[in-house]
Each structure stands twice: as C-alpha cells, then as structure tokens.
Amino acid sequence: RLLCKEKDFEFDGECRQAFLEIKAALCSAPIVQAPNWELPFEIMCDASDFAVGAVLGQRVEKRLNVIYYASRTLDEAQTRYATTEKELLAVVFAFDKFRSYIVGSKVVVHTDHAALKYLYTKKDAKPRLLRWLLLLQEFDLEIVDKKGVENSVADHL
Image 1 (cartoon, one colour):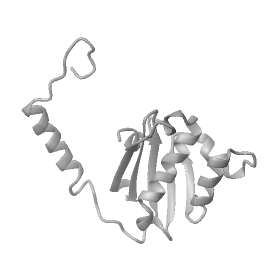
Image 2: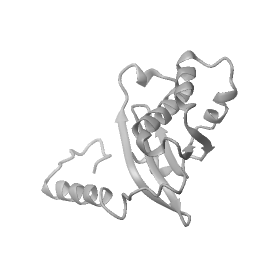
Image 3: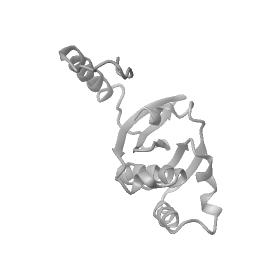
C-alpha cells in the first residue's frame, strides 16, 4: 500500500503499534549492545540523495553486534554534492557521531563507494574533500569496499 500511487496511505492505530514494536526491538538488547574495548570497531555507512546513515558495531565470532545507529537528512546544499562527496560526508558524520567510542581504536569502515579508498592518494581532490580527510587523519581507520547488497545494514537507515 505504501508504494502505490493510486492508494492513500493511512497510518492507523495498527500501523502505529507495529512501528512502536519495531522501534522497541531495534533499541533494546540484543540488538544494541555495549562495546567490547578489546575488539576493533566497524562502521557501515551509506549516503543517498537526501540522507546519510551509519551503524557502529563490532564482530564477535563472525557476527555483527550493533552498538549505535545514526542517520540524518542532508540540507539543501548537501543534496547537490557529488556522489563521492556524499559518501565521504557519511563517513565524516559517522566518525563525528561515534567519536567517543572509536578514538584510539582500530576502525574498519565499510562503504559501497570504492573511490573513497583512493582519496588519500589523490593530490588534486576538491578542498572540501581534503578538509574532511584531514579530520579523519586522527583515527586509525581502514576503508573496505563492500558492494551495496553486502552493505545493507547502513542502506536501511
């Protein structure tokens, strides 16, 4: 019903109850867990035309334990950024949001935009990108390219 243009979407009591149940499930254990300071952190982030989202987690026995979800909409100027700028903005947003968790720790960043891996070696990048890269230099980070299908955690934010 939600994606049909001809039908009106009614957010009734049943819909509200379902929304509240999903919200409670996503914000409670075992979904959101406390960090293990001995393990490296992983950040899955993604950008769309109108928003950026990120998930902070840690792998325990090949299973991702989510610690924090974050997302926000882009302002009018940011919606006009190129794709690479939006994707790097998502990374900068994530590091700013999760700073208190990740400072001094190893961080693996999963993104579906392969060009981000090569920005550190590019000498003639846009000034905005260079500023953001300078902000990220204080962190011990590794950028890993993940195809969009594999990076679905951040896609859903």
